Length: 390
Image (cartoon, rainbow, N blue to C red; front, side, top):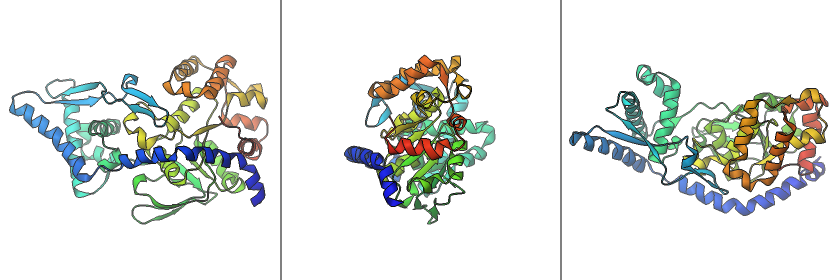
């Protein structure tokens, strides 16, 4: 079994050797990111408050300046990091004397005060805790989520360093053990049940794994199928993780943490549709909204394993399993093709242009139309054996 596994993963090992050349640059970025002390965070919050008090002392209405997190104009692309926020980015002003923004100003100040106390006392709270701290002021959980990220961006401090945690939606399984910050030992080896991704990734330590690769799975249904088919045991030691669609920050942090520690190839298994491609791009290059945290969230080494648009033709996936692209799909595809990172990925461009020409998309489950166990018994083993990624 060992020699068969070695033969199967010869191409994966070659890829790992290639990737190791870039490791030093990426880990240096990570170290720089982790050096913000509690005192420095408190100083940055105090600086915001001093600005407000100074305005009041001059009989002026206080104003907060927040970087525009959702603007492509504020983002630049670096092939070693992904999408990162530009240093001289444009801002939006939140005025305390304007009826349309006074409530938001109060919400930001309230959350700043909560964060200050958390950092000062070295304690943690979830975003849910903050919302229930004053539901009348915040109105919705989404308001809290957005403001926490806005504050993180404004202070140039990673959210986890603000002592605010978010409940994870991701799942992980495979050849992996680690210790949580509170000393709990987590074993991900079970073939029947996955482990929830930690809500405190930065606190994880003592990671142990013999995995040869990590497989990011777009959808929970596909992830569960791989679990049911005992994929991690059958095909060498490996780790599989899913963010259940668009990944939350914790799922992205976990993938990055595993890359920083293990330095093994990371593959993405997504639907052959614009939505799946965008999800893969978030893991690899990051998102505009979280570009200020690119150094700790992106993994530019991620490779596209499947489902490739070219696979649909090569494998002759039955026509009834293919779905015509909607107008919205075509619009999303056009948008993706204009992204700055696509110029460095000609093979990805070709695949997306093929989708554009064929005007069809397909879910990973479409492979079951060839054979019920085609995904785990034939498709993935062959892809990994023959280097069928781009």
